[in-house]
Image 1 (cartoon, rainbow, N blue to C red):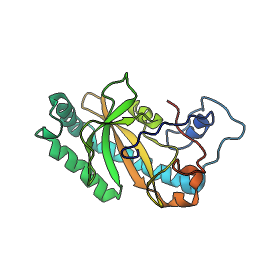
Image 2: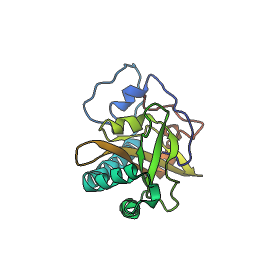
Image 3: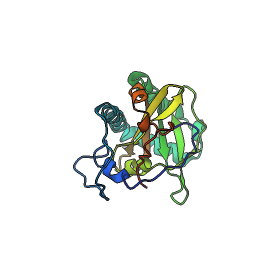
Length: 210
């Protein structure tokens, strides 16, 4: 997820073909067919797999107690003034430091009737404000539905600094998804594959349908 981004996702028929084998579950049949789907280079697939693994494994560590506290924070309406907010953020900060990710954060769909997810706890050195809105991305919904999922393209954090993003569901003690964990991870490998960078003029247009 590009910080402070408001870009709209381009949908292609080839999306779901590629989605069937790019870090959003195994053994799934594509919803559409295409005689010549884009082939994911091994180097790109490795980036996808690693980023999904980070998101999924860290989300598991948030399930239960952390998620219950997070839900209490949401319910309080106090945002960053909530008594337990600093501890919630500290956990994400630790994940970011130990993984080498650029950004790790929680998104929650506060209003299913609009076109946004809201960022809440942001484990970044320069965190976003509470409840900043982000345009929906297909991978948000996949993660919210219970499936760890990566984007199908990188984005530019800076010049020659591509980043790949992945997301995973976070469950409270009642097995409800209370948010999704986002991980934005440096992907210098994509410099050699500009067609897999949505900020490149050579982008292949791949995106997850929603």
